[in-house]
Amino acid sequence: MNDITIIIITYNSDKIIYDFIKKIPSTIKTIIVENSQNHELKKKIEQNYKNISFFIKENNGISSALNFGVEKIKTKYFLQISPDIEFNFNKLEVFLNYAKEIKDKFAALGPRFLNVKEKSHKQIDNKLEAGEIDSIHGSCMFINKENFKIIGKFDENFFLYFEETEYCFRAKRKGYRSYQINLIEVETKGRSVEINKETEQKLNNILIWHFIWSKFYFSKKKYGNFFSVLIFIPLLLRTNFKILFYKVLQNKKLADKYKYRLNGLFKSMLGESSDLRP
Image 1: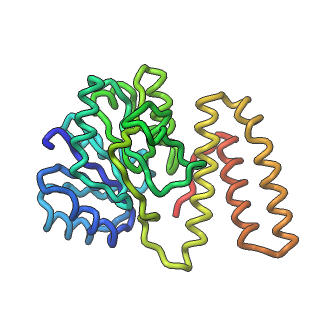
Image 2: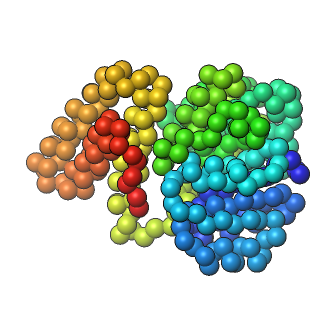
């Protein structure tokens, strides 16, 4: 496994990161990019894991952290993976073999997800061993570093969501396709950020804001601004209606949820940056 580096992006994920890195063989180079100022976590991990390099970075989003991590690697390939993924690292050989089989002409390879909703997470036919797919989910992507340089870095205008979708879309235009490998199966355990109940609602609203901001921004890159506005007008109208509806019902929680969605969409439509932070 000398040809692979693992890249993990974290944000105050102390509890699950320890469980996750225990499963990584000590022979595999690993980079952790921490998007909070968690110097104590850095100290503990570097003391106990000689194969891990730990970097603390200003929180400018997933894309920025991934690009930073890729700059640090010296191997031919890298696997970017979220610490909330249940992954068998013995299966890395499957990624390597498939990469060689297609002569390294690919944008990204990814696994099959077992515990996801079919409607929100598109996958290839489960009867196939492997097949082409429009986009690999960003929580587990196997990439050739040289191809990454040719395709271009992740767009750092994305703070959260759709950075992998845009990368795979841009790659396809340059002749680099993405493939899902069903021989590798993973499960996601859910949120990798530790939060208390008091801040959960606020974080959920921030995620809603970034999701819609990034969704429109990607649509604008794919279809152009004019057609994207036409596509999103129905959502805009529905969101306004829901805000009024929940205000009448005096349901502040749901009214706030749709206010965040509306604000994120407006910001993206106006070309403003994804500047909302936790």
